[in-house]
Amino acid sequence: MTRVLLFTGKGGVGKTTMAAATALRLADRGVKTLLASADAAHSVADALAVALSGRASEISPALWALEVDTQQRLESAWTQVQGYLLQLLARSGVDPVAADELAVLPGVDEVLALLAVQEFAASGDWDAVVVDCAPTAETLRLLALPEALGWYLAKIFPAHRRLARSMRPFASLLKRPDVLPPDAVFAAVLSLMDELEGIRRLLSDPARTSVRLVLTPEAVVAAEARRAYTALSLYGYGVDLVIANRVIPWAAADSWQQTSSWQQTSSWQQTWAVAQRAQLAAVRESFAGLEVREVAYAAAEPVGIDGLRSIADELYGDLPGDDPAAVSGADAGLRVESDGDGFVLSQPLPLARAESVDVARVGDDLVITVDNRRRVLALPSVLRRCALTGGRVVDGDLRVRFRRDPALWPETS
Image 1 (cartoon, helix red, strand yellow):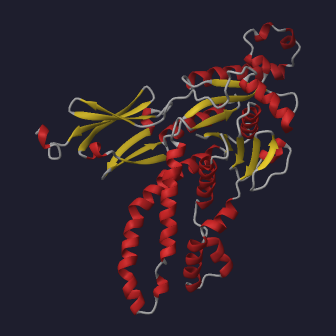
Image 2 (cartoon, rainbow, N blue to C red):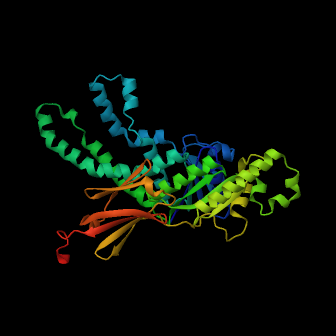
C-alpha cells in the first residue's frame, strides 16, 4: 500500500524544502519514494539542484522526482471533450485562438494533477509518494475539487445525458447530429466521475494519505495555517504534522536568555526571537493534538542533497524508530452515532469559531459552510429518513442532530 504525503503552506514558508527533505529521508531509509511537484511554480528541481521533467528521474538511490505536466495530460485525456467544445465555439463564430483558450475547462489542471497523484499511488512502482502542493489557497481548492465536481457530475450529468439521448433522433432527422455531444464525450465524463471517486477514496483514507502543514512562527502565517487546518478537516482530509520552519535558535531554547550566545546577539535578533517564541507557544496551543516539529533557521540555504539531508536530520532525527511516514494525526472523517430517538452526525472542525459555521439540509444533502468554504455532503441513507433538528460546535467537532421522521420510520410511530 503506497503512502501519500501532501505538503502545503503559505507561499515562501519552505514547504518545498520540507517535502524534498522528507522524500530524501524516506529514500535513505530504503523506502522507494517518488517526489512529485504539483505546484505550477515547480520549485522541487531548484531544491534538489537538478533538472526535472514530466518523467520520473532517479535522483539518488530509492528516490525519484518529477514535475506533474498537466498540459501534456490535458492533451491526451481531454481530446474528445476539447474537440467537441472547439466545434461548438467555431459554429458560434468565436475566433479560433480564443476558442482554443475557452475550450480548456476551468479547474481541469488541478483535476489532472490529482489524477496524476492517484496514478502514481496505484501504479505499485513506489512505496511512498511525497507531493509538493501549491500554496495553501490553491491546495484547498485542489482538494475540494474531487467531491465538489463529483457531486455536480452525479447530480447534473445524468439529466444532460438523458436529454441528449432523447434529442438525438430529432437531431438526425434535422441532419444536424453535430449539435449534440458524441458518445465519446459522455464516455470521457463517465470516466472522470470514476476517477474522481478513486481520488476521493485515496486522499480521504487516513491510513494512506495525510497532509503536512508548513509554517513559519509569524502571526499572519500561523493564522492562515489555522484556517487551512479547519478547511482540510471540513473536506475530510487528515493533517498529521505541523512543521514550524525557520525558527531562530534562541526562540526554541528552554533557557534562551541564559545562553552566552544570546547575550551577544543584536537587539534586532532578540526582538525576533521573543516574537517567535510567543508564536510557537500559540501554535502548539492551537494545534493541540497534533505534533509540532521545529526546524531552525539554517545558516545557509538548504539546496541540494546534502543541504536537504541536514534538514531531514533536524526534522526527523537520526534514530531508526523516527519514521517520516508515520501517521500521528486524528482521523478527519465523518461519524454517525445513534442517540435515543435520533442520530448525531459529527464532522471534525478544529479551530472553527461557532459563529462562522452554518448547516443546512437541501434534499438528501447536508451543506456545511465554514467562513467562505462550503462542503456538500450526501447524507447516509439512515439520515435521509430523519429531520435535521439542530447543530452546534463542541470541542472542535460540528455535531448535527437528526430526529427520526415518524412517516418514514413507521415502527416508531
